[in-house]
Length: 330
Ligand code: SAM
Ligand code: SF4
Image 1 (cartoon, rainbow, N blue to C red):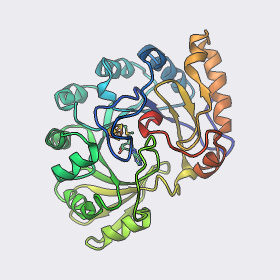
Image 2: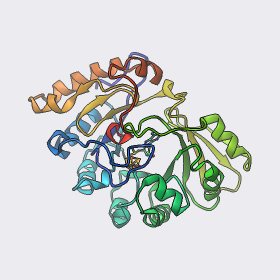
Image 3: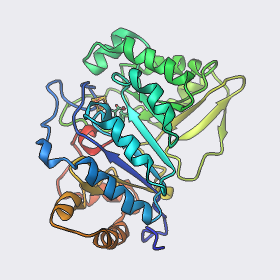
């Protein structure tokens, strides 16, 4: 079987697929208060098109898919799509990134889908007022309840916490404290400028080192040997059930082991979070491409994968990175 191997020898076995660009929240670091210009529905990939793309990718060695958005659960039929994807015998893991505001009632169904093993829940504050200020919506209680239910569920739970200067940095150690009794991984993410021209001003640069320093003010951490392609550097703390991690998303020190490609909700193929999209799969499919055509295409597209996010950014034709993560598929 041909495998997806880029020109730096990295094997691609993970695809991040944005199932929609729509969202029920308006996180300050992700989009402006009025939201983003969403694409017309017919420009989004259908579930059948997504299924087919993932199937072809798995025939080329992809084993994991992460479903993201926008908010995946706002798209009608998303839970049925998860079931449909689970029938792909070549796929091992279906992971989901969600804001958690709409999923409480689906948790039991998700647990039954054996390939759905990992849920990443985004929660940037443990205080209702700060959370509501960040998301510009009043859903803290629902998301907190969902977090607790997910922690009790059979799925692995990871929290995504975007560190925002002047907003939630004082809560870093509170989040770490949560891992004492809760079996989950709390991962702090460096804030990036992907906010759909939301124009956020950052007072201080909360990068990987600064976040780690803040954690160490109260905890003794030991680094855990993570999977080579892990997006986070992870740490354990004695007597804590869970673990903590830091995702150096913006300082990009993890690119050397990247195993990922991305597909946006409109079918744009991206080799890197920081590139501006290298191919429109939707039009290719709608113009009659066969699965063999798709395979040939994917094998050649990954050869263009840039060495790292800085090279990808430098090669952009559209100028600075300013799209919302909701469009890119975070
Ligand atoms: N709506 C879902 C959610 O919030 O989990 C999935 C999509 S969201 C774009 C995926 C992840 O990207 C979330 O964890 C979110 O916090 C993160 N994200 C969004 N904008 C970001 C930014 N400007 N910098 C860093 N992370 C960001
Ligand atoms: Fe929506 Fe997720 Fe962006 Fe927040 S981070 S606005 S929940 S897509």
